[in-house]
Image (cartoon, rainbow, N blue to C red; front, side):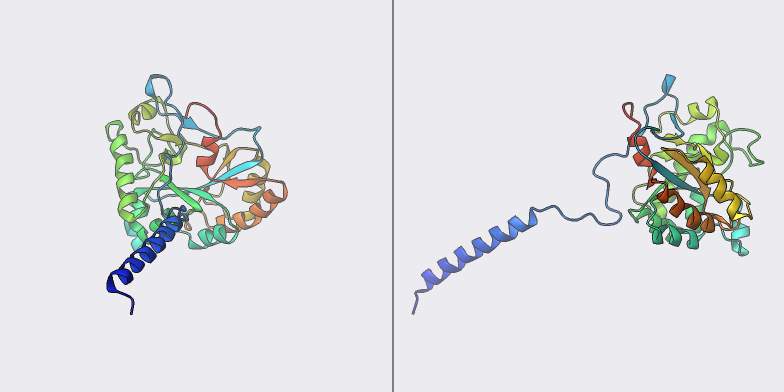
Amino acid sequence: MIPLARRLTALCLLGAALTACGTARQERPASPTPGSPSPTRPPVLAPGPGGLTPVFKHGPRARGKTVAFTFDADMTADQGPRAASGERFDNPGLIRALRELKVPATVFMTGRWAEQYPAEARDLGRDPRFEVANHSFSHYAFTADCYGLPTVDTDRMRADVERAYASLRAAGVPHPMPYFRFPGGCYDQRALRALSGLGVTAVQWDVVSGDAFATDADAVARQVLDGVRPGSVVVLHCTRSAAPTTERVVRRVVPELRARGYRFVKVSELIGAAGPGR
């Protein structure tokens, strides 16, 4: 019979060998999981003169055929009763189409929308195909005379944006992007100054889809196809009641743009390709 001491020694040596093998396997990097934090901070533009919030409208024109589809998830702070009565401010069919077509996208979400649809906000925020950015909490305008929207006072603008970020995180969006879209796209120097120091880049667009309140999907599709250039940012909407044709537009436009050689990217990639000054 083998003495106990020798058996223990052999077991220890075997255990050490197995541990070493296990350690070697664990040193290989794990595959990223949906919702995992980005290894680096998302790219942003440098502040403008006097620290003004920078504004991004489109990516480089000469670095390949890329295009970013952006979708505004609009819901104003006072539209809760309309949602309660059955009006739909979400659009699951559109999101399903984007997934089926494998189109990455940036969703600019109001805090009020995230509060109304927390499961959908969380689902988008944890899907690596999408990135969720800030569209204010209230969807009140940051300037006067902005498509009839109510306005937010200057001294409340910063708080409105911060409240939106809090709502996105509370809904389960783990890493909302440092990008902000003004409601209605309306801004002025006063609004840019009010948001100085937040570290956000204001994201506009160079292609207006015209899907808001549209009923002719073909006309919207033509407008998008006629407007897209390399580096374009297209503004669309994912509120079913206000933009009922958008899913059909996406299903028509995506194959056509791919046939023309375009590659779909998120806004973060376009900003990252914009060069120095991030």
